Length: 350
Image (cartoon, rainbow, N blue to C red; front, side, top):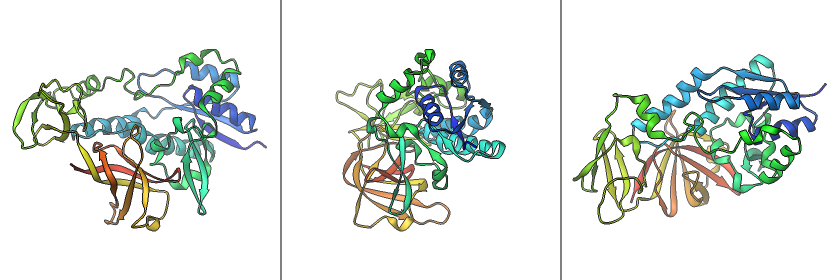
């Protein structure tokens, strides 16, 4: 009897390749798609039919709205810049969806189209960066449970993106052009955060704030704080005669501090997830740390802080880094292996 495996399927190139790869490996493949507000999945249905893979739509819209969308709105209200894709992976794809499949279909093995690998390091199964490092998505997966790793498979992590496209095209799937690669947030397809947030908040949040200098002096009126993020320079609508950057956002005072480009050497992350033992981190050793998806990794010392039920990670960089925003993710690597991650909660701005 063939071994069953479930695939989180969107109808895109990467999840389509996962179906093809697993079918060729001899698995009994079942596809599962969860509905997202405002998104259609006609191409997913057509691809599943062509590949003769059973497809089930899982209705978890209300949970998605509460866990991902509501959090996205609340974080912006607090002057933070969240990453909803990371939260979705942690609580929806590898949480609600996985356990729905496990409990209702008794399928333990689970696959997605993410570009990441698994490998054993020092007798510990860890996530590792994708073979195609330019497409690596390990940064977005720091939140998934370590105990799930033995049951996960990531076919795309083993190949180059262009090879994956070639393989999928060889199956003559006509509507692949519909499933183009996108970096927009799925529930904001036009990528207009301002419109989305204002629509959701309506009159429940100030539409205006104040720009202040580093001494707290008011410079000018600004749009509401939901329109800004730490390090932002473009779109400030404020002429100062020199380059000005957003350095701090204070939701209580309804202020945005402007000044020189914000740098940092020290950050603290909470809501952490470890793939290694807390004692793994050596006091005088440098690890590769990343504080936003688009930033380069940088050498930093890592200190695991035990604080009851809310343990934290303190990271001290060897050199000054461009400051990230609260709400973004800290991810820690060693030799391309993902060791830990967390949500940035404190930033020492310089």
